[in-house]
Image (cartoon, rainbow, N blue to C red):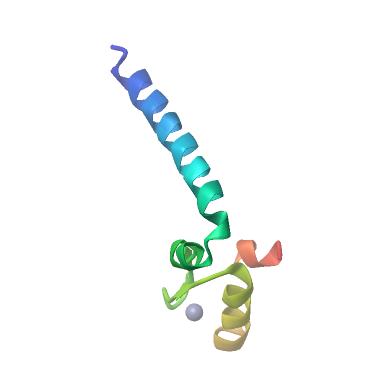
Length: 74
Ligand SMILES: [Zn+2]
């Protein structure tokens, strides 16, 4: 009955925990670099460290395709 809600609450807790951890690690460049490989090219599935790299990659490798929406925000 309350199971679904408990799950949501624990997910929210986890998200808060992760947000805190991310803040804590913000000054640690090595850890940040490892954790930052979360941009994945939607075309060739290569992983990229940051949005600028992703944009550059996309413009050079897939110039005929429209830029992904995340790149447009940069
Ligand atoms: Zn690509």
